[in-house]
Image 1: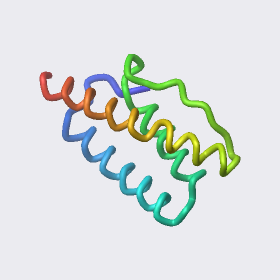
Image 2 (image 1 turned 90 degrees about the vertical axis):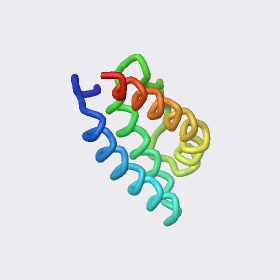
Image 3 (image 1 turned 90 degrees about the horizontal axis):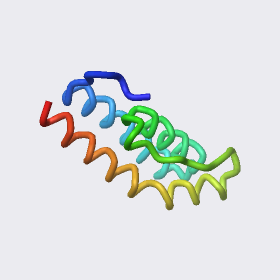
Image 4 (image 1 turned 135 degrees about the vertical axis):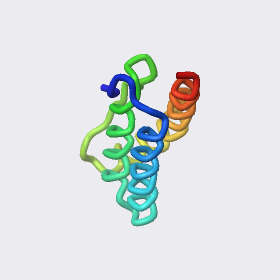
Length: 87
């Protein structure tokens, strides 16, 4: 669940670290770790922007999670950043 009253700067720092972890896992071919980072990013977002992610510890399933949800998570991140910019 997203922290209430998170500042834009706080959110950006957290997301930048998670993006780096995600990209590193992807570059190393660690699809399970990449999927886990997507789950963590999703949990930071407010409930109204969170996705219902399916997945598990199977590498084929994790690859599918990454392919299916990476773009959607990026969209949700952008939407939440916009909300924080208004605050």
